[in-house]
Length: 313
Image 1: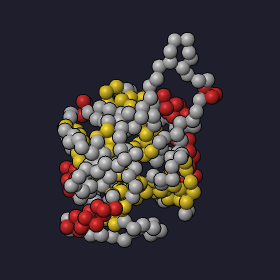
Image 2: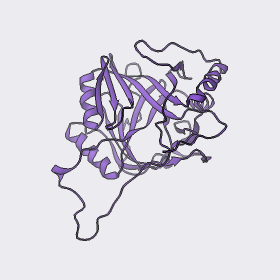
Image 3: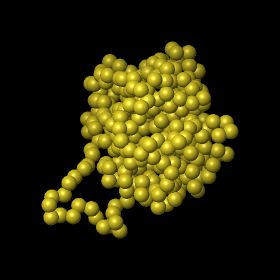
Image 4: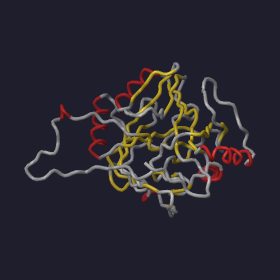
């Protein structure tokens, strides 16, 4: 597939991966395996992969409590040095990589103290809208397989993450000015969504307001509403019943189901999200909360937007 860059502009092209500390790696392994990910033991921790790919989407280590460690963004090789100079021109201090992390990237803190890596990497954000299936069988043909023969759901890739931030306007300013992302849409100073300029989904990162950084959810792309439903049912059978869905978002338009993990954050099955190609100047909007979150679905559960990484949470 041909990669198309937006000419004459600098910006990260992908959300490459994230690092997360969890209280118990055994519990984490069980949750993410049930979710449909390829979970591998790596260097005393776990790597989260999607089946059929050697790209590591997340690294998990065991810690006292759940804590988002860092976000890693990918850039094209020819853009790395100009992007590094831009970071330095902002007066941002470059840091050493965290202990045990082998990387050629540059590290720095964002506006809210979250550790960021920028590195040369293959583009993992899609170069066109991902395929979506909603077939209807012809008359005289049974469309659904027997339940015992249903194929297990396996997400195709990490779609995006939503993190907490103390100041949304500052988040928009930092990630657009330093990393070259663009605002897709927002709802006041409560939540916003940002995309990559070289072609990406409606958002590869989103922000929600809280008094400290933290992970709200990681979102995983699947190819149909049927897969969302089947994944949600499997998770419920494994004891992971708390969550939100099935529904359809407004900003991004994707169908969704969120499953709450054992530490209060969520993993989302997502399908058919809006796509913003590299030559599109997306007209961002600012929408009231009642018109911004979901088009249809169950009511949002109480406490759904809560930062469990707050001190004392």
